[in-house]
Length: 335
Image 1: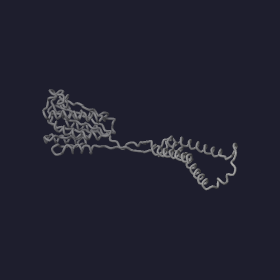
Image 2: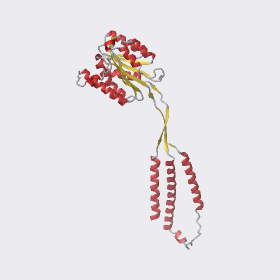
Image 3: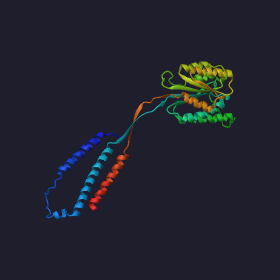
Image 4: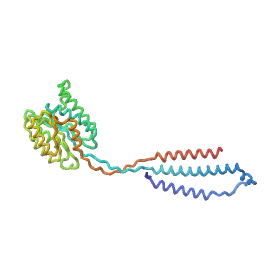
């Protein structure tokens, strides 16, 4: 414990000492007015008188002591007793993008990934999270943010939309279309499932690619790698683009991916320094946990000092001291 305003306590002590000295000097038993009572010797030698005088003197000392203690405790409170603690908080500086191929062949996998990622988002601390979807064209549903409530709200919307598509429930077209809106722009010209373009666009969505070197950037990438068009970037080129910008890509392949597409998918993920998971052999829950564990990058936080006022103990002692003075005063006056 430390006193935040030590000078208040020091000044108070000095003033208290000065008052005690002045009081001691002025305490002279001289009879400047009035008359002495004669023949008090008998009274002073009386046992009962001695007992009362001794008790009075003891109470007087106790009152004086408690009074001084009360003043000292008051000075302590005015000086603000403070608990000082130095803490060093670790920080996690990841930027995570969920990048989903939203063609119908990947929707079921996306639903499992989204449901599991909700728990991941709830446990984030200072990390940023974004969501990108693609088919022919890419759409950023959530730019990188640490507004976790907003992220969870969007993930819930995605879950509802995926469920509507899986159940072929088109009673609410807004819900069903949410996961695919804007992703088929240019479909007639370029085709669909442009996987390389989807990944490259997501990588390019990280802000400050050249300057923000202190953060770990990862992409969780779902697809069946079944390209049905003419992309600008092949998946391998997109992997090299991710590596150039220090982005780790963790791919999750669907159960029904062909062996050729799986091999190319894995090769592209390895280029980035990431890893490929296969839904057929890995439980999606375990996939998300493994990505979470593998990608977490902890850095030492800066040390900071936390100051907390702790007036409770001095205040309680002051209260008891004050009550003690009142009690002893009554003892002296009424007995």
